[in-house]
Image (cartoon, rainbow, N blue to C red; front, side, top):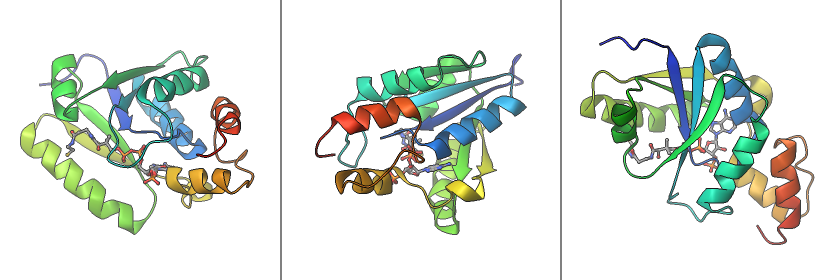
Length: 163
Ligand code: COA
């Protein structure tokens, strides 16, 4: 089954949303007609930001982007994709170690619904070292994260004393 409009879904916990994530979203938006940044509810890791904060921050970062919208979900990604008629998942690949995890997720999603494709964009080299965990640690220890996260995220993180 072909979708009428080429919409890519970029899912993640985004705790927090980084400049690396932003780079992937914008590149996806240059390929697809629309991109949905899809914020997942419960992270298995201890989250710094709750669900509604993560959604609000990403909305603020992307507010001027006409073809990018932010949605959120709970439960299985594949169920949300199916329910909304979405067929393409975009994920960023930073390192070889990402590959194993991404490969498993893509295969599991494909087993659950073979109409949903996962496409990978290779992370821009300047962002390949970034991770949300690393950024939270640098912020906690008083380091400068201004080049690692978009401004609305930076401002919010500055307000939190002990991420
Ligand atoms: N640049 C910089 N960092 C990046 C990046 C990029 N391009 N792409 C990923 N990252 C980093 C993030 O900063 C984050 O770092 P961390 O591990 O230190 O926290 C990590 O890679 C991954 O984070 P993110 O992309 O936000 O979310 P995720 O990979 O954990 O998302 C879901 C996984 C939400 C897509 C997946 O768990 C899911 O679908 N869950 C719903 C339940 C479900 O369907 N489960 C079955 C899946 S088969």
